[in-house]
Image 1 (tube, helix red, strand yellow):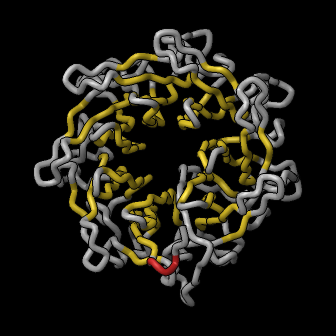
Image 2 (image 1 turned 180 degrees about the horizontal axis):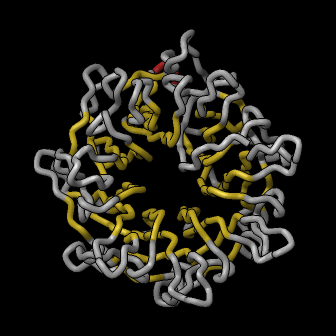
Length: 469
């Protein structure tokens, strides 16, 4: 099986694509707003820039990512944040992170990765994981900061204690993969964290809620507030959590190791919160047994994500196939019946051994679902079948919206290549955001520059005649 990066990715597309004749971008669909040259919007184009994300705040479009620094004295990765000028004809990006060699890290001498931006109330918040500077331990910390909203004189205020530690349940243990979500009138954070229980070393899914006071910030755990989190089985590793609001309830999904020694396969778990911070509880809506919502519970399933489309909740993930002749991970998609008392999930991906891959003989990883207008799109990273030029491709498909007779149509050219700018270069971690009634895409892509391993942050906007909401 070809090895692929498992960075979570998100991209949308449209029902009409025009493929350029060369190996570059789909010029009939996208106009680049990143300089449209060999480089992207990196702070330092000679360095690797990774895991970008777009978020709309107020009337502006912001991007964040983490980037290596070229400063010899400080080799730590930095959290970068930039804002777009909104001019497609003469695009530019202004850094709102200090605009120096360092970013918004709490400690710019320590590595910081996995940033995410979320709007809460009238403010923009950022979260990421960062190495601690404590000599006794070097556990990664969950950091959270809020932006002052002033691009001319930007500043970020920490709302995580503003010390050497973050909002970890146990600051001596590694905490990674943070995500912020607004539910009701409150800001929630989730992440995975190592436990301090010597008898049980399994990683736990943690969830906490912010008090909303930047002057006196505090975070209250709504996951039991003990050594364990909301895992189905707290003796098993649980990773990659995500929160999503569906209807009037908050849902969490993650992947968790099974306790079945005969069949050791990771399971996709889904649980719903009771909404009571004083007496929190989480009810499983995935069968509530040793297995989750996997298509095949004997195969590993990872990288889950929940998305609301219309009045329904959909889940996607990648899952190993049971085909020993062609061992390629498949993209699965299922829809929830919405009944927490008697939950069920129906597959809308063909419901067979294969998923919605473009080429089911090639591994597909890190799927995401997203809604633009009245359509549900799926995107993922998939190997191409070109032995001469093996570059990972971004695939995009659109759902017909019929759960009874589901189908997915490819909107990326439907060939061996996807929507990469340069299909001879591997592209990963795409994400799409609607801004000003248009669709923007961001991703990282390997450069074609010899003797460098720099990756570039690319940003493009769909042309008005190519998008149908």
